[in-house]
Length: 510
Image (cartoon, rainbow, N blue to C red; front, side, top):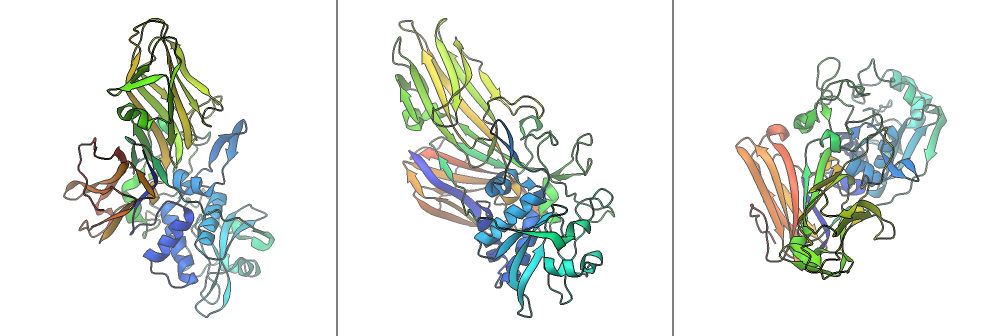
């Protein structure tokens, strides 16, 4: 039993399934007809939904690797320096059908993108966009200038025309300045492959995944040496003059900004900024017995518990756990009945048992709660689920005692992950077309619940999918502005057919 290829969204908000799909949704939502309109619309939405902050480092090769996985950066991490923004924007626009190249200034290393399209006068050419610093510059014709035009006429940058500029995200006295980054005479034209992957969920019966519009708990966040409290944006809501920095985006950011640590190495001090969102997969697989296990040997599943088939049998159960995002922590709850010499252990494997890491092994019951959090930024790296998007969890049991009480019950897995909450499918004024889809539903059904705070109280909108395909639901929140409601979370549930272990009853739509 399993659900494959699951995804959910709102047709009125760009999807976070991939950078390319995000760009295509922006074009559709904005009604873009020309490549010029597409490039301008994407530039605005990309700034709205990406955050400027630390680059992504992921474990590997005995250390931390710089990640240029555009899907991880966009959908899970949600933050990066200019290099990452250039990578993601180029991936998005190329995957959506626009001729795009990543531009790197050799002298400064500053990165942005150029898009090829025809201007209003019908003249085709390159046009340079830098959403990371919030700028694009206009040429003498009032079109977005190319890098060649900026190199030939530096005055376009030094004295930008009205209509092409946006104020810098950084405080001007703390920023590196904008002019130096656009000395583009030594520009490098970088070829970048388009990957075009799409994120999807594969869910087992009983799995519940909650995606929240709030920062993760400090101790459970993805950590980096310079950002010990997790990733967040460097763009503050208000500028050095007390004005909204980006008035067009402020209504979408208003409810999702929190103060930063003034003692940490953050350029914005203690000003409120957008943080990353968080999510968690929670699962009680023993409630579904053998159907939820990847494989098992010498065990008996009964009444929501598991026990060995007898003495001197090595009993083991494997569970396969998979999420589309960067994992941050793992918690295991269990109630174990065991005799004095009975052995119980838990291990994790990133490759279906080809290699293993022991979490616990010993005589008698393990701790009731075992939590494996990210290591401290400066601490030696230890084996963990930190950064894994797929792994196997193994339970081992053995006894030498006839009629041993050895049994595991009350077993729960909680896996935390980080996500870009800006691309979660929020609700906006007007008709919202919510959807839930799955490529395959094999003996299970899936549901999705949107939870939010409305001016008239706490609300829940739900969808249920009982066969492969797509379920839709239209909902109008009857609000005037995007910040009239506060998004809280979207929860996915996968259940065996005919069962629902939840207090809420979703609306059936297909």
